[in-house]
Image 1 (tube, rainbow, N blue to C red):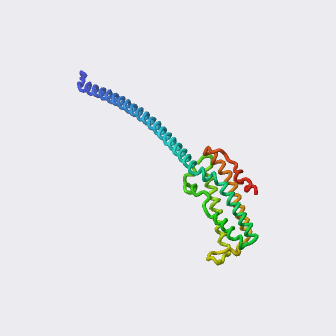
Image 2 (image 1 turned 30 degrees about the vertical axis):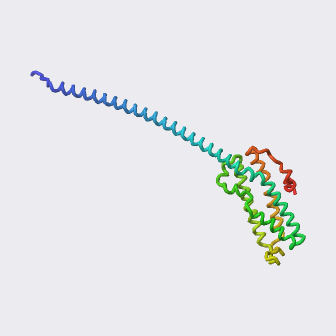
Image 3 (image 1 turned 60 degrees about the vertical axis):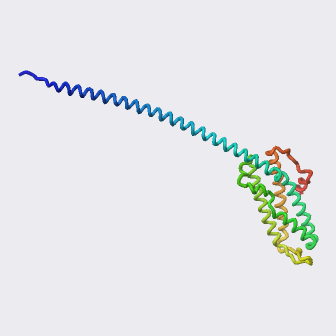
Length: 233
């Protein structure tokens, strides 16, 4: 019996071969495309990271420049107020000591002088600094922290002075005002108040010295104002 060949078999085989070739070619092209886009994506990610780093550096530089600029402005604003602080505190201490001595020798004659000196302690010692309290952190070398600390001491001193002032016994005088005739609190209150004033004087000298160095002002000894003498008293 003769063997017959089907002509369609060759055609089917040829089609399958071409399909395999086409699939292989498509896969190669697809792989190339994917690799290309992966390469582009990787480069883009690298560029984005570099751009982000550059932007972050620029923002940091802007922040530093702004902080330094604010610090310079604060230095100019507070230079005088902080610079005269030791002299101011020394005068407050002298007036207080003088009033206290007069009061202890004669409560009636020295009462007004003492209460006047105490009332001076009610006021803010660094009003300009308190007005820019939120910007003090821009000052370098812990100067801002020291200024804020002094403001806290000043507020505490004012509170003590107001409490003491409220304990004086006053009566109307012939001129229609009031005169001090006694004190309903503990006499030790006066010593405590003096300790606070001296502590602030000591702190003011250190603060003024550091602030003068920051501001480029020649460092002062305050000896001409007898500040050192008051400090050591």
